[in-house]
Length: 205
Image (cartoon, rainbow, N blue to C red; front, side, top):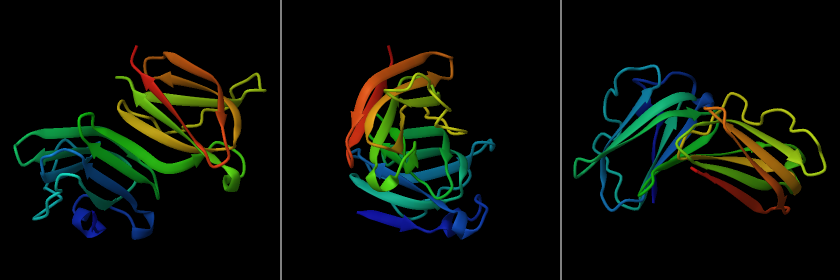
């Protein structure tokens, strides 16, 4: 079950109109309840108040917040006192960001970002960054092309442990990513069917 906490709960630290709001979903896939949740803009030096109040995120449950777009740090504290943090998460306007708490905590952007083509006939392409470096650039080129074209992430990044979802025209594609340290990884000859999904998981060497 997913509960909804309105933007009023974030009023002390968030600004902007309701129409500009995005959403954050905290999914607790552990066997321990979450008693406290903190959200802080990346530019802030403190966590501020607990955002759950008297609520609890039970094991195998999730909780949805409205949140202003921008760069955020998050922290949860479990009933046994353990804590988890997720730093420098970029929330896009109108997007939904999911933070999954589990054996390997991840955050993923669920708003499809079109690479090109007619969205009515699109498939989906997910880049999962399982390295210890942020991914700063992603290039996509149809297999028949000889150049990469522009970066598809723009001002976004894919932090370590996170994933990013694009919509994409069906066909044969080559992909290249570049990390914060300048290293690159290439994946060629990937076929995407109409309405299908392709996932590229990039692991640490």
